[in-house]
Image (cartoon, rainbow, N blue to C red; front, top):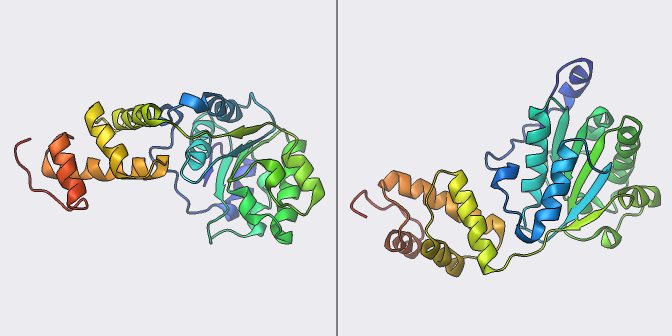
Length: 250
């Protein structure tokens, strides 16, 4: 998704505009820092043009990598920057789409390691990196592994991507997961009691993606049933695999 200031560069970017929507929740204020406060701050700096020219963020699937990149694009775009978020695992993308993106203020590339070893992608990434550097643009990338473990064949590209700091998104313990859930619920305008959050932690996998997807589903079910998120209500939803429950007393 492209975002930000109009002008001469905007016309050059129109051909690259992608129908990739930023998630509504992908904001910095809905991301629980916890053990990853330093990573959150690095992404904020990238969005505000105060950080390193390139940052590499890695972590397990569902750890919040895409959330941070989309939040950076959202904030930078609101400040008037020209920026883009590209999830490289999307089938809609091709290396040619990077042409012209070296004039962006911020380019956020998700799952960059997924194209390691692909000559077309590696050449395109190297070219856009060089353009970004020449134009004082910034590059924020995510991956499932640290930079040294990404199997890039183009040495110049590997050295460029390794030129900035590497940040790891660390897994959260139960208390941190609960706080992250409550922060997301609060951002949604929901009251999530601790006992309900603990129930959710017992009933789903411990990834940000899975937990937050379940919370969003519960939010919709509670709204449809005109109910609050109480332990009996949520347990009934989980036992019925989140099938609708009729409105009634809590």
